[in-house]
Image (cartoon, rainbow, N blue to C red):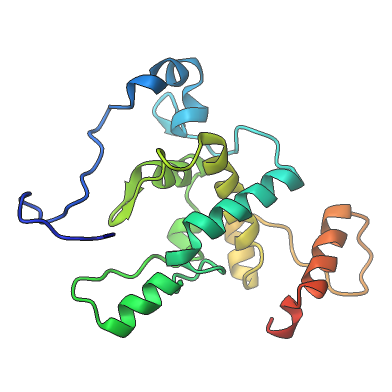
Length: 193
């Protein structure tokens, strides 16, 4: 179980952290070919931009992967109140550490490579997803997190660098914004938000 304890290790955690400076043997040639893409770092520095072009397809793939791998703990909106957290809170599970609200400033200002690294190798009690989520899909999740940050209050939009929301009736020629507005209305997001 996630965040399970074990008397076998001194720190009491059953899940073990990846050893610093190591990676799976099957990936070693890939990391050497394009370290930024596979590690989120180049020359010891985190990438500040995504190593691919952001497309509608990439964002949709990121949304799908986020819903599967991240939303159970972080929630659909990224606020940290997913169903796993809600259940743990209702059971008053001892030692449960709630997942981070992904709209907090310290997360929103992280370089994209650092977010990728956190998803890949884990952070604090969150396990790494490098073995269950492909490299491209982890980058897609990072792209989606930026878009998700743009749905929050204006302060979060500024932190994540997302474009401001266009008010209904305002002129905006962007097909992506028009499609977003259409989905917002057709998927009944507007009912709550």
